[in-house]
Amino acid sequence: AAANLAADDFVGISFWIISMALMASTVFFLWETQGVSAKWKTSLVVSALVTFIAAVHYFYMRDVWVATQTTPTVYRYIDWLLTVPLLMIEFYLILRAIGVASPGIFWRLLLGTLVMLIPGYMAEAGYINITVGFVIGMLGWFYILYEIFYGAAGKAAETVTSEAVKFAYNAMRWVVTVGWAIYPIGYVLGYMTGTADQESLNIIYNLADFVNKIAFGLLIWYAATSESQPMS
Amino acid sequence: AAANLAADDFVGISFWIISMALMASTVFFLWETQGVSAKWKTSLVVSALVTFIAAVHYFYMRDVWVATQTTPTVYRYIDWLLTVPLLMIEFYLILRAIGVASPGIFWRLLLGTLVMLIPGYMAEAGYINITVGFVIGMLGWFYILYEIFYGAAGKAAETVTSEAVKFAYNAMRWVVTVGWAIYPIGYVLGYMTGTADQESLNIIYNLADFVNKIAFGLLIWYAATSESQPMS
Ligand SMILES: CC1=C(/C=C/C(C)=C/C=C/C(C)=C/C=O)C(C)(C)CCC1
Ligand SMILES: CC1=C(/C=C/C(C)=C/C=C/C(C)=C/C=O)C(C)(C)CCC1
Image 1 (cartoon, chains in turn yellow, purple):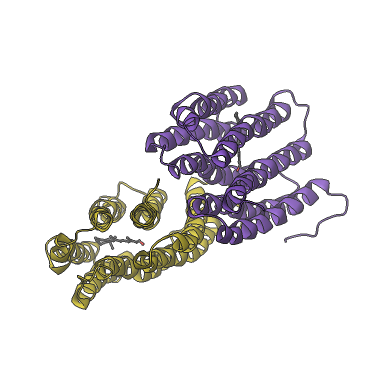
Image 2 (cartoon, rainbow over the protein chains, first blue to last red; image 1 turned 120 degrees about the vertical axis):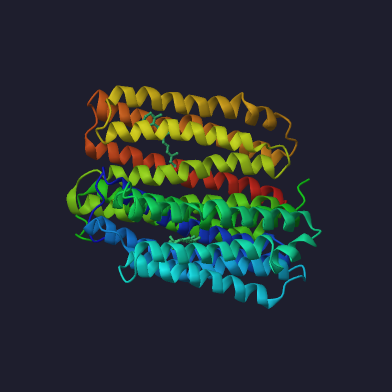
């Protein structure tokens, strides 16, 4: 650490907690691949990639915050640019494992991701207007929601018979709806209404990453283990 | 390390020993998952997460201590905030593996953890009165003890037939009673009666972490291996 964490730096403490939790989750998802059936293994590995990439970025972000008390926006978006497409791959993988996915699902979700994140970054970094970045970003997110609820992915999911896959797909879909909503809410409070300062904005984004990276992976793990080892 | 360990810095030496022991335990628990039956694997992985998270924090705490000879309270509590809930998950997992757990058990134990640790931190960091923090923290701990002895977890444990699970549950319960008691004792000696200085307080907490993290995991490992590979 470039500097020591102060006992009253609660934003720094939240960075610290989350970076360790992400590291631990990575170990957990990787090791738990041992106990699940073949079709779930790749999904767990990808969950581990998400938490691993995020952990590394969080270690940098934490140091930036602790040393300078400024928002590490560029690291955050680099992290999202890698991890959000991986989360989209999870939807594809889970449908592919039961033979109902087409690659087009993945490409459309990736497109939605880029439309959501790139304008968001350009606005937070000051290249484009805050409201313009927000509106375009929202369209990207809505496009993702459309695809997983009503588009080809949503339709493919309707044909699923496995209870565990159904549970996972459904839960993942709600994470993308409710868990992801925290980011644009933070953005509005932080940049548009001015109600949230940098401290609060970082705590909000950190909390959101906890839900959307760790809890998301745990849902997949839960579905995978409940199907793989019928408890007796 | 920001500074070198002095030959007479016994607190520093204890930090050093424990951080390495935690690292080694992590490797041990992870690799030993290979040899145990499916239902014990997750418990061992979670034991590894506890020692892994603690190891990383101990490396930081050790450096803070060696460089400044001051107590790294904030790192200790961040560590506890992550590892104590994981220890509570162990109770849940061991009961879930044999099909007698309800998720409510986990949530109540998590609640007890937060009531125990947050006031403890607030008091040690100077936000609230030392005695108030102690009394509320004790209530949280008693609530955990109630749950694992007489509450839903305790009742579920009574229905267990596997000798190994019974042994593990019972031993874990005694660790939470006797091993955990070291922390409030250290707190009383360090902050309330003034009999223990910062050196002693750190040695006491370090020793307690050794028992409650490493020995706790070893008990689970012992139960897992005695069931998985009946020695012959
Ligand atoms: C809609 C919207 C946003 C949404 C960001 C999201 C939803 C990020 C999700 C990140 C995740 C899930 C990371 C997990 O690994 C921005 C760019 C803040 C601002 C523009 C409008
Ligand atoms: C009751 C009580 C305490 C208990 C702390 C405990 C029991 C910590 C346990 C930590 C463990 C088990 C870590 C292992 O990974 C405090 C907060 C010192 C002070 C307030 C009263």
